[in-house]
Amino acid sequence: MPQNKVFITLSFVKGLIKELNDSKAQQSLKDSKQYCFDIPNGKQIFYRDNKLVGFAIRATRHSLVYTVEKKMPNGSPCRVTIGDHGLYTPETARQKATEYLLEMSQGINPNDKKEQLRQKASQERINHQKIPTVIDAYRHYIEAKSELKPNTVAIYDRDMNLYLKDWHHLKITEITMQMVVGKHAEISQTNKSHANITLKLFSAIYNYHRKRLTNNNQPLITEFSPVQILYQNDLFNKLKPRKNYINSEQQADWVSAIVQTQWRGNEKANEYGYLNQDFLLTFVLTGLRRNEVEQLAWANIDLKYGTLKIINPKNGEDLLLPLGETLLHVFKQRKKYSNGSKYVFPATNNQNHIKDRRHVRHKITETTGIPFTFHDLRRTFTSIANRCGIGMYTVKALINHSYQDDSDITADYTQIDAKDLRDAMQKIENHILSNDVKNIILNREYLIKKSKMTK
Image: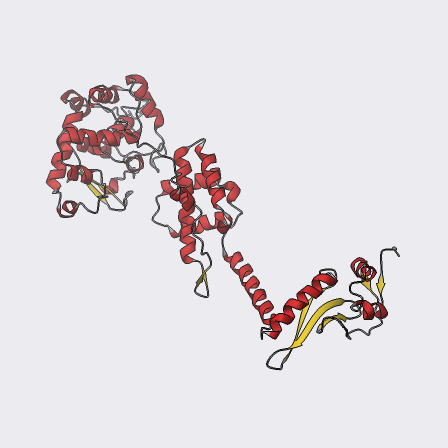
């Protein structure tokens, strides 16, 4: 047996408290690794201190524990376990015993306090388990926010996996203000816009769960979102709104290039005939967003009354938009050759709608030298409306913008008549489409595939 193993006998324990200040006794107790008491299993013996009344060592066959006891002011006995030898030294055990004796003399039962602390710690562990990780919190948030657009969810998915992947396994309450500031600065180095979006998304997720997570009607999360430090210190990136559009001097060349550019299968008498031309013209003649144009379905277009309907757009309010004469003609031709397609602009499988037509945009840019995005065409639409002298409230109605300023009482009383909208759409169309361009569109030729004749 190793020399540093000390067997503590009954005689040693019996004299230990009396010799508590004896360095040899302290060292023997500190170095001992096991006990060998001549005590039957299940029995215990208390060895009491002669200096500090109430302080004792409880010895069993396999343990040595410091205790303290005293009668409470009401006469009831109270015994408190301080802790095992090894966790406590004789000095720290005596100090703790003194604290407990003081509390007991004041009528405070240390056991009650210890139980309260134990229950509190247990409850904190349970509460901690109920708080979701960042990735689980995000999934619950997306499930609850059924009104979010698929494109919006796609952006959120991308940002969560690209920028916050190292946070996925952490509880949302483990994210600190310092982490938020660091993460925002890190993302800002590559994409300032998405740095703002990503941290605002996390704040929305955090606040969603903060309001809903409870236990026994008590909130599990009491701290405010750590993203508040970005708001309080004005740390979000200042982003200038995009103002690009096709100006009045460029519009004639731009439109002419569209109607004169040839694409493969351009003149086919089917659902793909003049698809790219009509796709671009629809943007500038309606002011719709990219996903709204891509997803245009025949079920929401009334060719008899010349209207199209956008269901549940970005602001949540359905939009019924009248069509100008030329665009109505375009849609009638597309319907004529739709070949049973569900969408106005079908994908090559004729089952889904087109997506990501950036190559069409790039080709017109190469031809004209005029760079543009699909959203630039929405701004072009509104700029043309302004040049045509169309009122602000009518323009907002055409592009389905809500009134942000609650103080604008006039907006609540202003009702835009359907005829006013139709007249406005026709003015915009007449402004951007010259008579020559209209004639090209109205006199398109469609190539019908000849069937093979059997001899």
